[in-house]
Length: 99
Image 1 (cartoon, rainbow, N blue to C red):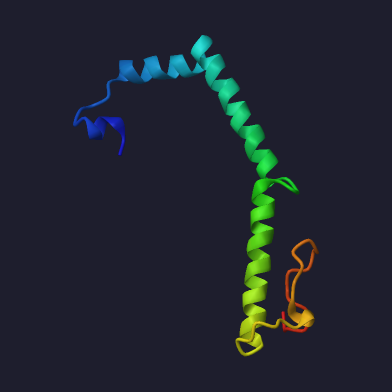
Image 2 (image 1 turned 45 degrees about the vertical axis):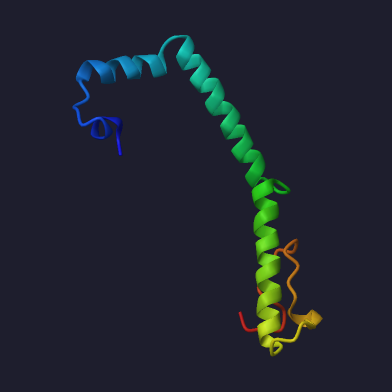
């Protein structure tokens, strides 16, 4: 919900102009850009190889691979090595199962 709807009022052209100028010119604009660059760098680091998002998706793939292997093995806790996927490899399909 935008601020105008929340306050049950129209946002004027002058208010929009003031906000746009604040975001594009002056010290507040510089601060906003620096903050945006910090978030950009943090996001790039997270999705880079070894970053937090990369580690999380690899962990998820490993967990799902183990779950699939358990189901293919009749629910036994022992997982055959032929169906375990190591998420550090480029192949994401479990070995021995149809792709």
